[in-house]
Length: 505
Image 1 (cartoon, rainbow, N blue to C red):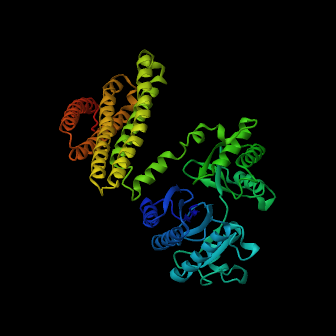
Image 2 (cartoon, rainbow, N blue to C red; image 1 turned 135 degrees about the vertical axis):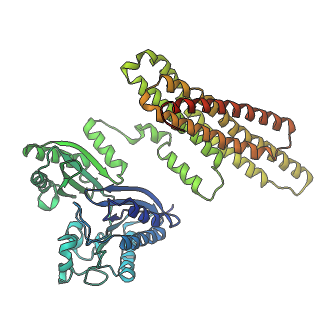
């Protein structure tokens, strides 16, 4: 089993996209690491990054990101609603697969020591990595925040675990640790009264007698003019999301307020959402296997496909990606048709839109199948090339298998070309009779189909060059030429219609 660790560093920057991107690039540059999410908040002036990988890669990426943040973020100029002690405020390591908490603790200690020694930043170990019980809770480590810690750091009980007992002049301090998955969950109120949000937070958080495993704070969100109860659920199994939300709602009612909406920051374990769904829907005997996506293995399929394309394996490659373009184009056409069906003023064209939606949905299934078919065809060619060729019969068999594989490798992208051309016939109808607010969605769908066609055509042409059946090659070239002519006409017509609306594709 592969060892996979999640790292969720929080950086004190949520307003300068160029700085956030520079930090993310440091993580992406480490081979074996994958950035899953970067949740920014301008009012909190903070970005929460989630990435995964094997332990050595994750350690390196965490250090590089911290180093870049040290270069680009000046805490003397930082202002934001969220508590923080440094440019890289916190770096938690979370065991996901094949890794225990003890290994993550060791990772945190190595990274913390390196940050202190190489960057001169004082580091506090927290959560499972804490060296004293007083430092297990992150709010205790952050007490006084950046401004207060500048003087408190010299006190005997506030000295860092690694590094100097003084703040870095611009990067402050950093907390590093190991912990289970955490859910960052915010509840927005229908009031801007900060005192009410703070009172609700006091009633909810563990430290003042509320729910165990819940950290909470009342903050003001300037962008929306609302007060917010921002929470961290450090153990969602013992204290689930719905329990925290129910208490926030009850306390809000006591103070004459209500919860208008909630938000999740960063990623959340699926089980946390399923538990709340079971509770709110009052589901009896509900099992995960009742979710159809799990039964058919579709959950995460696109992510897995993208990762496979990005790997060193030659398949899936351009042919499969061309089919993916067709799939996304079909999804957009289906969306436009259904948006039109949702509007009463378009009732006259509802029967037509139902047909278009059904056709687009059927094409989505066709393109999904072609993504797999193209990859399988390439693998068949590769396998044929590995066949033995010591004897004349073996050579003949190998040559025959290669030619058969190449023909299959032409057939799949040729089908993609044909399906893209067929799908484009619906574009003009959607532009003429579909919801006019979705004209750009039709345009993007057309561009995706055109890209899918061109990519698939390239794959047809490259394989035709090595096929030794002249009749097969001639038929395929003729079919591609006919399809190209159709596509050119259809795209030109769409461009003309879109141009009439002052747009260009």
